[in-house]
Length: 223
Image (cartoon, rainbow, N blue to C red; front, side, top):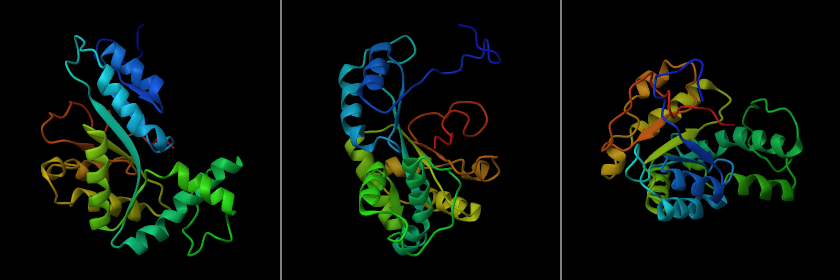
């Protein structure tokens, strides 16, 4: 295989998956695995377990390396975050309905927009979402890290206003928790100036950052 452009640049190869098949493939090939918990949250823990249990060291990777992508809506308070998250709810609802995925403004009440069955489906799809004020976000992130032992987190954020999206990233960047959170989002200032400010990389401080433009490897909007 010859990549154009990119030949000779040694771009790292990842396996992106939303189930145990991708986890098994990444483990068999000794490759890093990125799990799409923003679309398949129910399979997250099983996929993480399968990947680590079956991982075979390769020439490029001596140990497993897991990245988890999560929906993120952080705000000054839980109430505000829940309000802003209705933009994400409406977008996911449109996906289920086969409608356009235009970002819609947040609403005070979703009950007039979705049916009970649609609400169950949307909340199920977004069950891994991190929604809340700083304390709630920190608690949820710690739970995800504890249950998956993820080496890296990636966030997918759907906001109607760009300033709310940037503030969400800044809130996560400002969290002070255990060592695993201490070095979170060291490159937020670069992400602020990025053409795609809706995603932010999360890296454990014990690992060196790869070279390249900020967010090249992990800052992708997957929805």
